[in-house]
Amino acid sequence: MPRPITLFTGQWADMPLAELAPLARRMGYDGLELACWGDHFDVREALDSPRYVADKRRLLADAGLQCFAIGNHLVGQAVCDLIDERHQAIVPARVWGDGDPEGVRRRAAQEMKDTARAAARLGVKTVTGLTGSSIWHAVYAFPPTSQAYIDRGYADFAARWRPILDEFDAQDVNFALEVHPTEIAFDIASAQRALDALKQHRRFGFNFDPSHLAYQGVDYIRFIRGFGERIFNAHMKDVWWDKGDGTVGVFGGHTSFGDARRRWDFRSVGRGMIDFESLIVALNDVGYAGPLSVEWEDSRMDRVHGATESAAFCRRLDFPAAAGAFDAAFERPQAGMAG
Image (cartoon, rainbow, N blue to C red):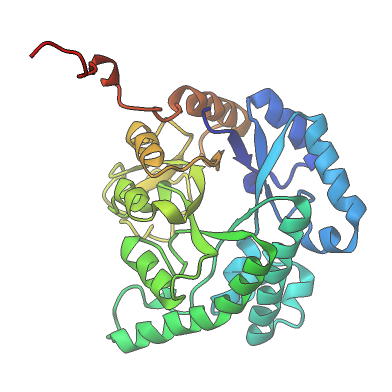
């Protein structure tokens, strides 16, 4: 069967889940990837109250929706980051605490362990998210940045995330990093380095999102083929690039999304430059059978219109993998044929 089409709710967290769920069904979705902010899914409530989890399941079922993953990107970002005032706006107050950077990082790590437990209670096998990075600020190598400096960043990542991933393993849940600028992995080379730092921890994989790779010039189809067994979730998000006015480069020029000067920007699925046909072929080739989860972002378009057309686009695009070779019908039995 074709894969379920789901909607990541992170960009809809201003809307109560009781309102979003029936809307998502009307927009054409089979399920939701629940964000752990807004009122969509609260990790602490899920652990403290069995009724909370049952109520979430019932709300989704009443709307005719399923849930295959939850996303805790915001807290995950704080595990490895150099913490500043921006993080206070994205993490729960219990994680921010007094704002001491190391305290924030440690509380974020505990919250991610709790997220694995909450996912297990909800009955989902995948948590999507971010990791943060202590070395993202050094992505451009000046002042001169040695490989030893970068190695220390990956060592910090591994030390902070291995205990988290061990809890994921204990809960039989996978963590899927959205490979993304500002993270420890933001292209193919850094994704491999992250895996190596973790000694190929079996619970660490990727939330494949072509939009974060394409505008950088990274071969996003090669990413699928190289990490097929590690793709635990797939975001459908489009992007265009090389369309700015020549004043803003790939680093964004400190402009906001939607600024006409930008060299790249996100687009409603099917309206950018991602080769989704090749993407689906590659996902089939590596055996990915999980959801196609629309992460809808387009600064110039009404989101209900955009999410509706994105669901329809994904449903037209997707197809089940072949059960056998297309030319098998031409084979003829050899036994009994005249010599």
